[in-house]
Image (cartoon, rainbow, N blue to C red; front, side):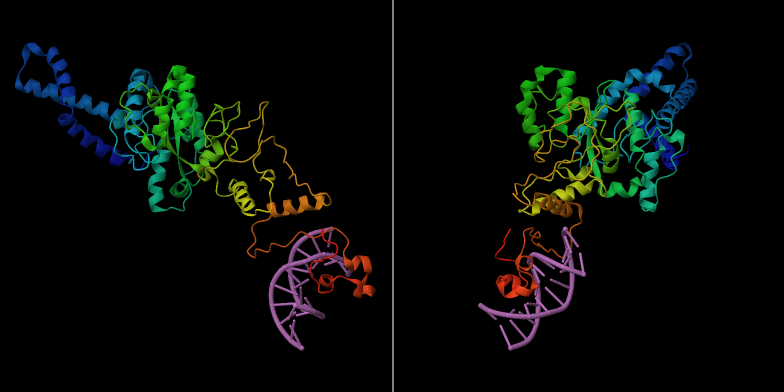
Length: 430
DNA sequence: GGTGCCGGGGA
DNA sequence: TCCCCGGCACC
């Protein structure tokens, strides 16, 4: 696969090579030293230049090979550095605000690569041009769908993190959403990915990922810093946090911007539910092939909702709660999310009301003495029908016999006035 | 098509 | 305010 960014990359590489001498004199010195050690006895200026040029060539080769895709064999040589790289990358991503972070500005760009969608290609991916491709197509032709995803392009967008299996699964999942460029504009979501080795869990909230890291990786001794962390999560992040008694987990997760469709389509298997995640973190289910299916996104974060199908429950929920007379919770979301409740199902304690997603649509529990069936049906109609333009809060039709039925047309004078006037019957009220 | 009833209009 | 009716939704 060829990338449109390659010229820029090459130019950048050349520029980097030039700047490399100035910006990283130590490395140059080291190279020169090693070269000098080899050719020390016969040091001449000309020889120096030669060795320097050789070093430049080598260095250029290094830089290029670190920026442009390298076959996977490269990983073995650099795998030991990945932890450092990952740590640096996480530091970078943490030191910048997730909202204003600009992908191209990134130290360690050559090695770590910006594995966000807009940045340089990831060095660990043999064909990572997908995300980088989408960026120009975003600008030039926003309505164009993403390029044909060939089979070998299924390793997009990925971090150089060591956990490749999970990343591949996740990346493959992220590929399933088609026109990423357009959707990314209005439906980006920041996810948090655990960078712990062989973990790679992705949660939708920092709290969730921190808790995950804390509990799953760092151990429980960090719970004591929960207050500090809570303050930080409440917007006081990294303020007064200098003692570093806590927050160690910050270095084990990173943020990544995801398309919400990708999230919606593929997030379900990502977060192995630490059951006390915050409300935004999606519950997960064991997916055997690590491919993501629908996620039960019946949560408050509308950002995670797919605009079409998955927004329906939310919309219904909102519409539903708008009508106060419909006292029942929106549990009759008609087959919206195909929950596959495993044994423990999940009664996540997020605020979305008493929904215990057991997979069975719960019928409203009105206590109408007579006419529960009709009432229920009416409620269902309200829920399943789109919000009408004409808000006709038409009263549900009374089920009892009315004057018309009781007395018949021939005894219309016996009707109640309302019935005579074609109004709601006042005699046989429901 | 029958029925309930909302919305509107005329007196 | 009373009375009537068109029209709509539901059955």
